[in-house]
Image (cartoon, rainbow, N blue to C red; front, side, top):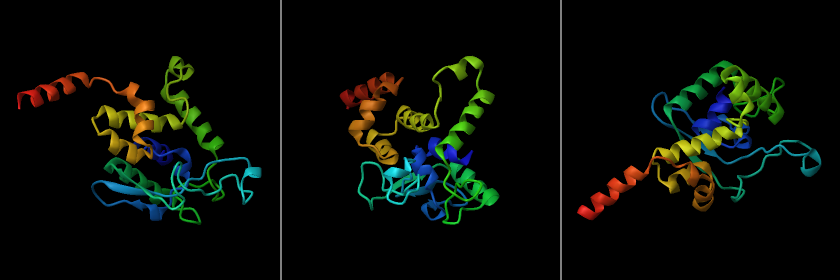
Length: 192
């Protein structure tokens, strides 16, 4: 649950989520916390890695190797992560999420759990639809929520690790119901 919560509440990519370490997390007893995202562990064919590992640690997507992306996280996610750590502990290298043997969680494993969860939570028609078909859709839901909540595009892009150009090109169609707000702001500016 905490793995999926990171994708939804922090808009992390799955490869960023499975690489998350305790040292990357500021989880205060109350209030907002912060994740410092600096590593991604995308799953690739072992012949394409230097180590022969399917989850080679890499820098962030479209960023320099040493770049760090700070992501503020709401109190709900802070609590979920604190509870997760208390219940499951940490991997040998401090990772929050680990396989049964302490390894990196495979995409097939969390995707299988996701698919089973969809069957429990959704109606048969919803299960057959594209609604939340992949765990990655949680990231899309987070970014869409932030934009619809009126968070400025630059801030959303920074948190999600996008450029503003990519953010607006991909998510502009998700912004809904802001015409009245825009009209009111324009009226206020004209009246000033």
